[in-house]
Amino acid sequence: MLLFRELNRGKCKTYLIACGRTRKALIIDPVRDHVSRYLAFLAYHQLTLDAIVDTHTHADHPTGSFQLRDLVDARLVMHRRAPCPGVTHHVENGDEIEVGEARIGVLYTPGHTPDSISLYADGRVFTGDALLIGGTGRADFAGGDAGSQYDSITKKLFTLPEETLVFPAHDYRGNVSSTIGQEKRNNPRIAGRSRQQYVELMASLSFPMPDKIQEVLQPNQSAIDDDRTKFPDLAELNTVRQLAADEMSAMLASSDAPLVLDVREPNEYHGELGHIAGSVLVPLRELAGRTAELEPHRGRLIVAVCRSGVRSTTAAAILYGLGFERVYNLKDGMVEWNDRKLPVER
Picture 1: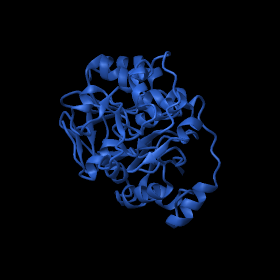
Picture 2: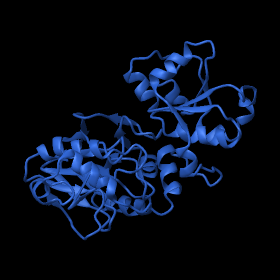
Picture 3: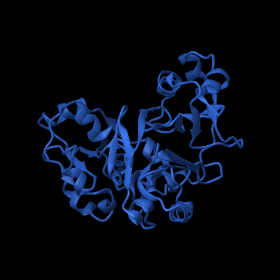
Picture 4: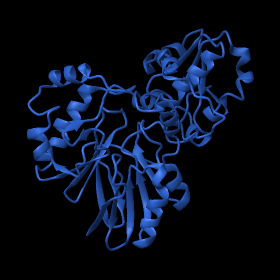
């Protein structure tokens, strides 16, 4: 038997699933401002927090995942394309998350962000910002793609049983839940629309940017929450030049090979994805204080690298702002480099 509860009672939704026999629990999309509430709920109901899932990298509120992970030593689970170094377990489409005797299925549902997942358990699907009640999540953030979002909804979420209850990460109209059948028939964003019509609709919408987006998004992406760290703004990030993995591979084989600057954490550098031979490790959190080490390379081509290309875009923007003019970013990072089966060291 699964125990279930929505914990926030607000526009941002946080859900708890727990195994009734083992009392082990999973929390989905925690908000940092409510961490004390979650801990009190767990204690009152004698539940042990075993896992935390962020369905995607949030841009509108600071995640509570890092605090919960550290306070109770729980697993932090996200998709393998999630940029954050604080993730302890990466998942892919078709995986299962075990919580006690419960099995929670993972659906990869990109489009709102490249790392978006939905979770399916006990007749419920937790859709993050892929599918909302009577709407869909925006697809205009960096890495968002309306076509991919349409595919995620119609080819994955809408193939679930029609009676499946839908619980999104946000709701702004006071809804509690819907069903897959209701959304297939009545969702005004997607019901009856072709893929191209959906892409055109999403392109025609003008969404305001979330308040203090950079103050929220950058710490969520990097797990760096330090007032001394000055992150680039969106305009600076958007000017960073991107290199595909195949392009960079060709450059490394040339006579004018670039300096590869890896800005991940040391455990990532030597971890599952490995690192590019000859790369220099300077974690993003240390970059501002170690730029003097890069002075001998000021006129050289520099390519910043991280797990999925997000932290390294920040690093490239920081270096460009400091006068390093030949700076690029490895698009989609070491995840794509590995998917292309390009050489790595560990």
